[in-house]
Length: 186
Figure 1 (tube, rainbow, N blue to C red):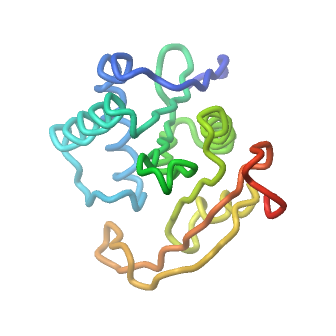
Figure 2 (cartoon, rainbow, N blue to C red; figure 1 turned 180 degrees about the vertical axis):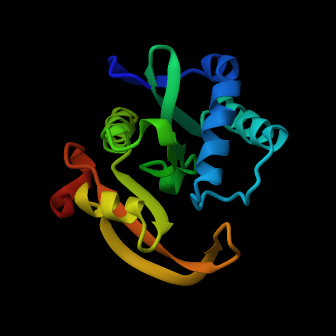
């Protein structure tokens, strides 16, 4: 990406279908660069496309929101909100699959994507966001810097690209501008 203006916005399911090739490239780059996002390298294009087709289906069902960072028509990052749809949990969302392409890193995109995801979650009436990440990684530092609260860790939770089992750290954040968040909001 160049130094053009970056736009962060949610995509409709139709827009996600149109951008599925770029989204597949983004996922393949994340896996190739060692991200612990549920896939093992080498991630081939057909598998990446299948993953994104599943995301589009969840978007159509109303259980997923996809936000992307674009610059000059090119996707440089994304994050998803998995929306709990059961009545006892429809106040929460899970932030997941935060990807920033290697060509776009170190420019604040992950932080901006998370801020946009929180804003969308609040607009949708979500008062709680949960997320998890590999212990010791950049995403853990990001969660802490954004005010997410660590509520636990599980050893040997996820396998990395070299086969090593890593500890996963779990975080939550009560959204501060939501009336239901109460006095524990940070």
